[in-house]
Image: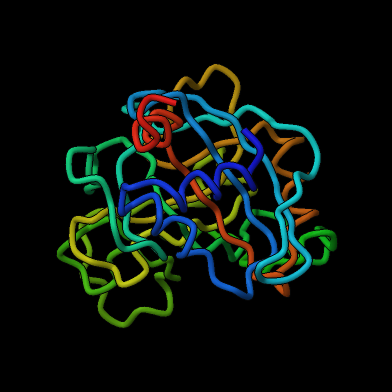
Length: 242
């Protein structure tokens, strides 16, 4: 479905969450990454890029749709730029193996290589090192944050991802889920590399390496990009079975 049509349908829908999805895109945002899955339990979907010249201008598709890998248990409503959600749909929580649905800020990027070797990445960039960790312990004051252990005087977490050790994190970008770090609402959600043979993520969204590189070449922080992830079934249900 063309993104402009999708937004128009959302605006006329009687469903509060659908209206909110369109209204939650910041006016200054002129780049959108749209990930659509067939339904809430789908582990795969498609990713399409869109651009507009200014707030209120029509969205135009950029490039082709590419395959995307989602959580092992599909999607669930996350915490992001949107506010309203479907109450009868899954709600994201820590360890649920679901990718977050909704509207989210996108960036910074990260990877193992130094930024000077990736000059085509325009998003702010964090180089990974052996001491960089993504904190997924809800009891930690650093929950949901990416930190450098060597700079923390008193580490208080019992669980974390050592990002340097994760092959899929060779290159990626942060999806701005749960920006206020609400305990147990889900942590450290990324766009990252889709490794061969992997059939579902722990809650991130994965792309084939070439598709991820193309996306990161395109993303421009001056355009304040966001990512929207949702099941097509949610849109259809809000339109009376369309």
